[in-house]
Each structure stands twice: as C-alpha cells, then as structure tokens.
Length: 240
Image 1 (cartoon, helix red, strand yellow):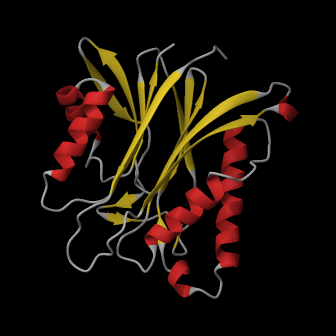
Image 2 (cartoon, rainbow, N blue to C red):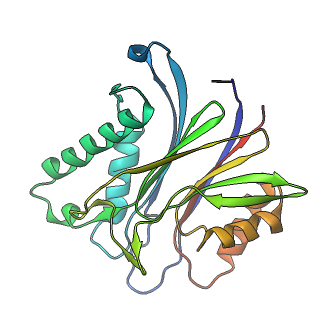
C-alpha cells in the first residue's frame, strides 16, 4: 500500500429545529488512528473519521449517538478478526450493538432511541466506508477548477422512512464499500443535515471551491435558513 498524507478538517453545527425538539446537538463525531494487521503479517495504520446522527423524534437520540461514537468508537480496542479491516470493524460494531442492549435493558428511553453511523477509514490510497442509516460518505475528484462528487454509501431509507440504524431494535446490518483516493481527492463523511443529496453537495463544492471555502460557505448557507438540522462533517483531502 503506497504511503499517503491527508489534511483533515471537521465542523459541527447545532440545528435550529423549532417545535418541541430538544435544544442540543444530537450529532457526534470522532477522528482517531488505529493500528491493525499484526496477526495478518503486515501492521498498518488506519485513520478513522466517523459521524453519528441521533434520531430527533425519539427520547434520547443524541445520547445514543454519543454512546456509540464518543464512549466506544473513540476509545475501544478493535480486535483483529479474519483477514482484513472490513471483517474486524464489522465484528467490533456488532459487539458494541449487542452491548448496548445488554447495558440499557432496563432503560426504555435509551432502547427506544437510535442514531445513524457512517465511517470513512483511510488506509493509504484507499478509503473503506462503513455505514448504517442515511448519513452519507462522499468522494470528490478534481476536474478542471472544480470537483466531481459521488456517494460511496447507499442510504437505509424507504421513501423518507429510516429503516436501519443503531438502537431502537433496528436490524443493524453494517454495510461497507471502498474506493481509491488520488492526490487532490476529497473524502467527506457527513450527517444528512449537511446536504439533502449528492447533487446538493456537488453544488456546494462547485460554488465554494476549496476545502476552507467549503466549510465557511456551508456554515453560512446552513445558518441562513429559518430551520435546519444539526450538521456535522469531516473532510479529508489527500495531499501526497
């Protein structure tokens, strides 16, 4: 695997949701380094970028997002399973899911709450994506003076209904995909409060240009709305 360097920046905004919605940011985010591969014969460094979006209309979606990301994913040891990072991370996440139901067996407010989870795991010139729910992971490649954007995840929705996630007795079927990352490419891991679709995010990239311009423009655009959801994202730009 060729060496690669990334510039990583993040942003999170608490939404203005109106109604009787709780006044808190129900998103959670984490960035961490992970070493895996000792039992596979080649120790490698992986860079995890993850976001979770607490489902608003449940008793404690933000608490579930923080439990999954800040309590576990930010700190836990991830054991090596099978022959690669995909098997290891999926097995780890399933274990956290089982622990959640055991730990909160007598706390119905937590058991009835849920969040999404999306992760980009950078391994040199490759990104592994893992997700459950509808928080997108985008890949953007330079074309001329702008970018062409595609979505690396398929949202777990039926119409506008979320059909999978972490918590609320959801199936929790972790999906994964991967893509090559060239110098100049962007990997974006976001909650759905950032954009409604890959086309909307592509427009933002074209309009705001650079990574710093994107973050500033995105924040300004979101805050100009009368009502908006919590919005959280990581942007990793491959620089070498």
